[in-house]
Image (cartoon, rainbow, N blue to C red; front, side, top):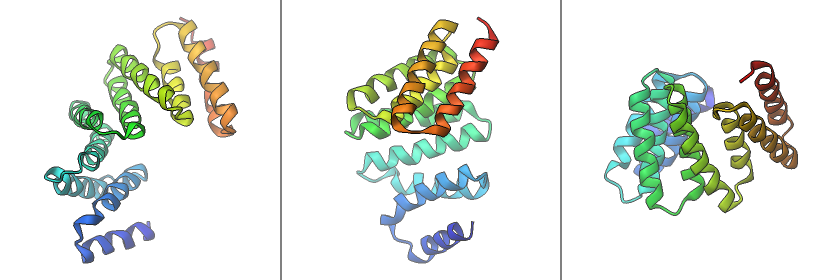
Length: 191
């Protein structure tokens, strides 16, 4: 946390608008650490700073962080709004990796809101983009999420098996164990 405090101090003293990308990453990191109030401040500032910029990709990333913030604080409608807008802006850009990442976040927000069918659609769209660009880690993540969200047990098992294969190829042992746990729950859970 001390390092993040130093980054916050630097952002305050510099006041350089070119540092907005740093602010977006800081907001995201603080959110992951559970520092919601501090994350909110940086997410809102980065959103405002990028709103009038010509860099649509940067503004989309600031919206994605706002979406995560609202998803974490229990406002799925606002989270979906920001994720959808971020995805729309990203589709105008050529940054396919960010578009896939935002698609995953949008799917998670839809899933959390109980809109599983829509989440599956977004995960499948993201999977198609990830496969077209050979984004292996993202392919694995999308397959794992489809393994949680797909309506039929056979589909879930198929997606989880594919995710396990991808993570094995990547040497991602921790993710392999998590997916194996998902497979166990899918087997024991029925349907």
